Image (cartoon, rainbow, N blue to C red):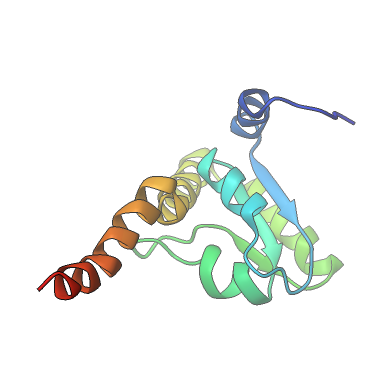
Length: 125
């Protein structure tokens, strides 16, 4: 077990992994899922709430990870990733990384500005 890890070291560890497992049921969003997607790891997340509705979705028609609800489905997803040809695994990891970009600080900043601009411009008239 690793504790008190610097963020830069966490990113290195995640970047060296093939997949990440997140099994919390009804996770509101799942920032850890986004973190390993951003690092290029294929997510295997619980098929509920945030991961199901927002995070582990297709990106440009490419599957960006797996959703599972029980031990068998998690095991099946792990086996699929292990048996996947490297080129397919890299495509899925790229889709996951691109999908994670939708939750970046830069994207939040741009979307926030776009949302408040009409309000601020209207109120200054």
